[in-house]
Every structure is written in C-alpha cells, then in structure tokens.
Image (cartoon, rainbow, N blue to C red; front, top):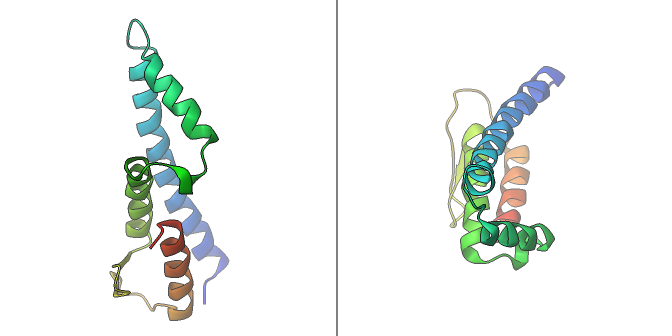
Length: 113
C-alpha cells in the first residue's frame, strides 16, 4: 500500500526529472535564440507551431523527443515494459501489481502503443 511518504518521494523523483527536462529545453532555447546572432527564427516558428499542436498530431520525430522523456520517467519509476506487454520491475521492494498495470496502461496510451 502506497503511503503519503511514498507519494511525496515519488513526486520529488518526478519533479527532479522535470527539472532536468526543463534545463535541457532552456539550454536548447537559449542556444537557438539568445546565444546566436541572429536568432534562429525557424526554430522559433517551429516551437510556436508545436505549442498549438496536440501530441497526437505531432510528427513521429517530434513524438520521439517526448517519448525519450517518457522513458526517463519509466526508468525513474523502476519500470520497463515492451510492446509485447512484458514487464520488468527493477526493485527489491514489494510491487503493487494492480497499480503497476494501471501505470503501464496509462503510459502505453500516451506513447500510442
């Protein structure tokens, strides 16, 4: 059974990963806009389009960039699943199989399996 302490720890793990994602984006953004002279206006136009585009309508290449971060989240959750439904849990702690199945189902739907 997940406790409040477990939930807080999980939130901290995911928040740390989100910060890593933001740092990668901010560094990329600064490279394209502020560290170049002139700024990379093509990148700016692409980002504006992507902001307005739902995930399902992104190109496969664009989705792959988001999938890369989704896999990082899965690894933080100590969970690996393949397209055949095989699941590996890399932990010595007890696993809530019901919760695990819900997480897999949610992630698979996000990754368009």
